[in-house]
Image (cartoon, rainbow, N blue to C red; front, side, top):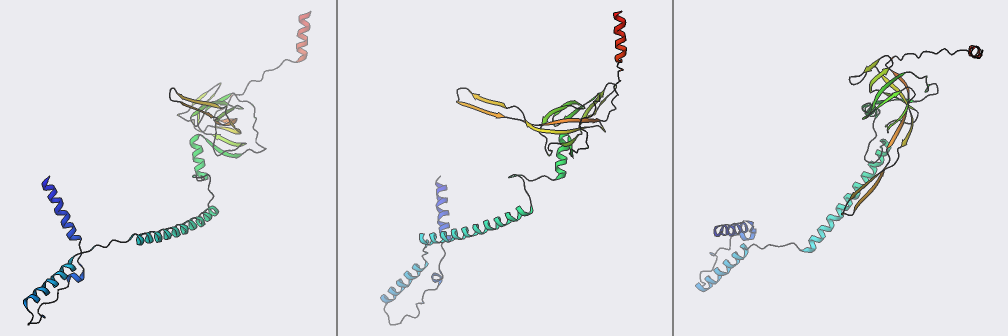
Amino acid sequence: MAHRRCLQALTRQVSAFLCTKPSPQALSVPPPLLNLPVDTPTTNFLHIFTETRATSSAQLVHVRYFSSSKLNDENKEAKEIEDDSYGEEEEEEDYESGDDESVSVSRGPIGKRELTAEEKEAEAATIGYKVVGPLEQKDRVFKPYKPAFAVVQIGSHQFKVSNGDSFFTERLKFCDVNDKLILNKVLLLGSNTQTIIGRPIVRNAAVHAVVEEHALDAKVIIFKKKRRKNYRRTKGHRQELTKLRITDIKGIKAPQLPKADKPSIAAEKKQEKVEAA
């Protein structure tokens, strides 16, 4: 411990000695003593020598001058004024650039950008559908029934559908009411005569549908409680849904239904007469 204290004291002294910067006046050589008159006595010589030594030592002493608080305050105020003026200039530039961007680029909600048509199509394909376009008057939505069914995957849900069925699924993006859709992820096709199973999807198979409406499901109440903690939370949630109507199933040949021959009314009356007789 003693050695450590000694080292610390020495380092302090050396740092103080190195920090002192002698002034150029201190480095100047004291006036020479050769110019003294020869007739002066020794007392005068000693007096002059002591005065010159004192002046030289006084010049070697380094005095530290600390800046006054007033100067510091003035400098700080000047810097603050400069910073404020610089910040106002930046705000004006940002405002002008924001106006230009609002004119040139159309953005969506805050923190989100509008997706391009290709990105929308790719995202819809990952979910399992493709938007064809709006429904037209010449399109026949209600077609005759076909004895065939399909298992379709939309998102993470699977549905068994047939021609003319309607069902609800989670809200589908990028489509409006009366838009035509093609459901690409067909897992299975079936009829009375054959069944086609996909691995995992059936090739060259598609299910056509139409968007009928966007709706909200019934409210679900979420209640949380922690006993003896004075903690109770009640929240409600309504899931967004989309109603689809199946218009056609492609990829399988549905068998035609046999037409039952109905007996004529005259034949039925003859049978009744025979039974009565």
